[in-house]
Length: 143
Ligand code: AMP
Picture (cartoon, helix red, strand yellow):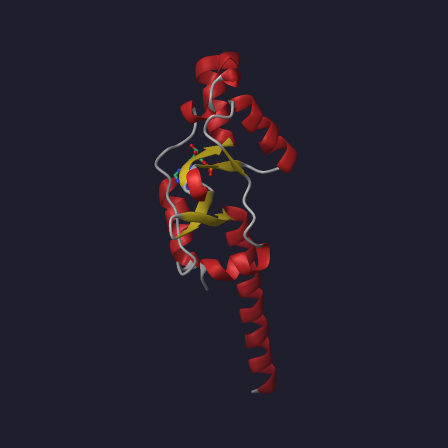
């Protein structure tokens, strides 16, 4: 199973934001869309950063309310681990576990084409496990 399998069910929609937006605007988007991270994009949807709720918590702890009015580029993570549609879901799980993050933007020809979250990976693995156990049950019953 690959990243493409996940995108084929969840689609290509990604909530993005520009690096010049304020942290306050980013927080509003996270809350309104009920999501845990925003992909920060530049020209032609290239990925230039990621801002997660954890970054917001850290900014509040270190800089307090002053951080609200700052551009989110001061808070985002710039070294973003990305993936492509042909990457195996097992590799994605490994990258998330090694990097201790829960989101990986999907890129094609340098442009953002989707996002995979740890929730998407868990959902996909559960459905695979269900199919496997049903196939085994059928096999045992017909053997
Ligand atoms: P998360 O667990 O995804 O909410 O993010 C935890 C931390 O990892 C935050 O500092 C994020 O900015 C950062 N982060 C999230 N996703 C990625 C990614 N794909 N590559 C690099 N850092 C990330």
